[in-house]
Image 1 (cartoon, rainbow, N blue to C red):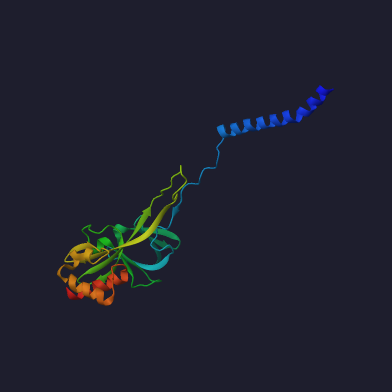
Image 2: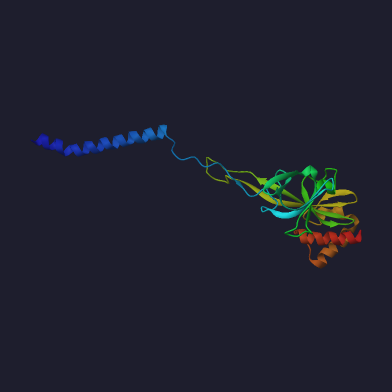
Length: 228
């Protein structure tokens, strides 16, 4: 009788032990044969390739001087071509065929030029630009796309998984039939100003101008254009 009671007493223990053992076996099976976690989704492309994301009505001038007027357009900075929306059908104008374009719905005084049509010796990179000053000197605002690649470390699960695109600008000056990249300080632009650098420095000090904004830089070169 005592043995029977002992057996009945231990029965729940053996049942629990068997369930625990079965659970461990199943866990080992899952860990060995099945994926532990869902894989991460593929990286995304953040940002836009377009100079302006929305379609804007504008005019287009081709290198052969043909004019395309009043069509919705947008410029792809990554692939360097202009898209033209013709009654819902998208036509593409390659950079090699393009002279300039402007957005009527924004400001028709803002014209974007093919850099090759401004200066054609390949000193400036291929693409589009704005002509901020067009006189004895030319101040050019080159528009381009910078791509920031993913720096994600899967083992440590840190960093940015997605690749980003950022629209950027670089200023160039054409003077004395040479192209110069505008630097971020007066000293860095010594090879542009030459013997007029003292006057430019005084003008900048009087008007509290610096090489840290397109507005200030435009004023500096407008003054320089007057004294050369």
